[in-house]
Length: 424
Image 1: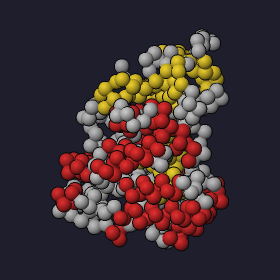
Image 2: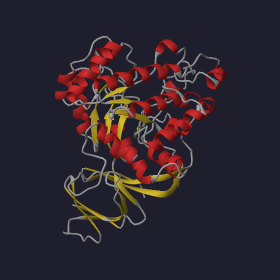
Image 3: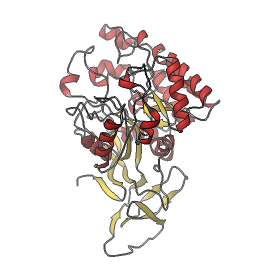
Image 4: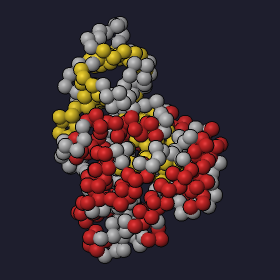
């Protein structure tokens, strides 16, 4: 048993907040109330005075590079990074090597994830080999434990195939997530076509590459009734398209990353490959449009797109270095610093975007605090200021190292057990 006393609790699902104690037993919350006493001698008591008590965060877009790329990250180190960032549930993407387009690879990642201190789930691929030509056996993969379907990292260009994938996923009531970039319009990906591409003297990635596929997939989703997620949205026009589609259908979802609501293409000029990602950082108007989307509910999920790479890879020239940054250990702090402290969102709203809503997308029993609910709980020092210097992740490819951030996870509890505790 575990008793958390004297903390300020926020449950973003019910809206309940205030000073409450929480008593857990096994993997569940037993009681929530005021003035709870330790029921037995063996019960651990945590004094959360001055701390925010919230549900464990849920990230539905992470890359743990396992199998295939263990020097970047594996499921064990990725889970440790997640716990350090306050995430108790993550959903891995399927662009591994081999890809997760078969039962055997899916079984491998799920079994390895089960051995970590948090809940590690995985998507399976939409198409075999991520080649965009033939659908995977989605029903079989769903039965084997896939949380959803995506070819994230590779856009799906065949509209007829996308329609069929949506129809089959809708029949299973499972989400499909889309990486929206038309490669036919891109010369050098990872850098916005504009000021940044001009600085580097390369073609770059135009906003139209995202807009074109977002528009197609939103229309297909409305026609099929599929539950879809537009991943890592980057362009203001895409935000508006999602806003219009959500007014017509309830199964439309979109996610924003902390780097897209924090940075612009100026960061790519300043940090080089450490700020290279797909889709790229765009203009200030795009960043503000993403924030407005988070404020009004157009964008209903914050996800990290945690994408570890080695230092050697990121030291390559801008056109050769891989895209992506790590994000699990700075996501909550960036949300607090750039959204809550800046006055855009309440803390309750931020937590909903990072726990309840992503859990709802994947029909997970997560992202809330209630009696009988999961004992997935985080303790946050919202007043703490710090500058990240080292990471639990195996990689350190991020422009946020050394930034002054506010809000820090001091303890992560998953299934009633401590998965992370800040060093004294």
